[in-house]
Image (cartoon, rainbow, N blue to C red; front, side, top):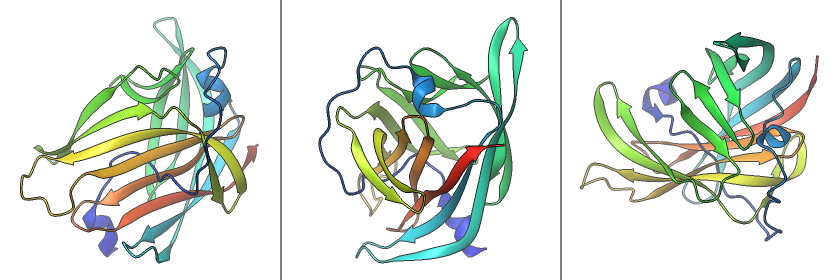
Length: 207
C-alpha cells in the first residue's frame, strides 16, 4: 500500500485530550504498565491524522501477544509476537524494575525514570535522517480509544530532522501506557508528509 512506502516509524504516540494527574509513585514498576505476562494479547487499529485534525481509518488491524518467557544467560526475558502495519514482528524484551528494553539492541522502549533522557538516531537504509529524544512526561494524560478511556503515562519522543531544509519542523511522538493494560496508543508520523499515524487499542485480554 502507498502509505507503507512513506512511513518511517519513529516509535511513539499522540498527546490526546489531556489533563494533569499526580506524578507516578516511585514504588510503581514498569511491569505494572507494560503488562507483559504470557498469554496477554492486544488488538489495534490504525488511523492517519491530517494537519486540520481530520482522520481516515486504515483497513489495517494488528494483533500482539506474549507467547512465552525465556532464559538467556540466566536472565529472564519475554517473547512478544504479532504484526505492525501487517508486518510480522517477534521481539525479545527485558522488563526490569523500572524500564522496558529490547534485546539484544538494548533499545529503551519505556521507563518510569523521569531523569532518563534517551536519544536514538533514525535511519532510512544506511542514511541517518533524524534523532529522537525520549523522556517520560511528568504528568499522566487521559486517552480515549475504541477499547475505552484510560489514564496513561506518556513516553514522549521529540523528533528533530537532520535535514536543515526539512519543512515539517520538530515533531512529537509518544507511546501511551495504562496501568494493568499495557500500550494503549502509539503515534508516529509519515516522514515525508505533515500527517501522523496513530495506532489505537481496540481490545485486550488474556488467552
